[in-house]
Image (tube, rainbow, N blue to C red):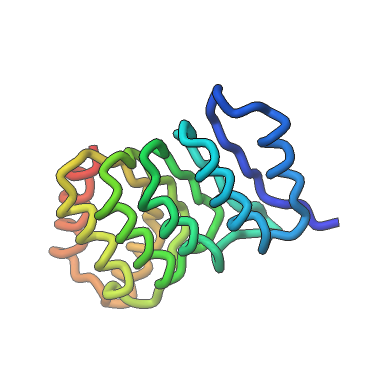
Length: 168
């Protein structure tokens, strides 16, 4: 039996049976739509932990989650670690960061891109954001882009300085 990744929704106002029902979904294609409905029906949710596992990830569905979270007035933290964010997810995440000023933390640990232009919308959204946000970036993804010649030393150093400055 394939185990699902952890789906945690941390909020004292949400009753545990409702959270367990969401966690018991056996087909991952139903988790994101069910999570959308759950978020819409429970306006006090502040943290979404949808990190993947070794066997199962939500990579193909995260762009939908990011799109739906743009309207959330309560979600402050999102953990999508152990999911490889592709270009579609990164673009959707950039849009989420630019449009939802209440979001304060995003945890990412893997980006699956081959060129810096795929990451540029996310970098721009963070740099241009007026509100403080903490975004955990996967260092290895930027190092890989640097090794491929997609980012030169000057831009690489500038990127880290500006992300450090704008995300704290």
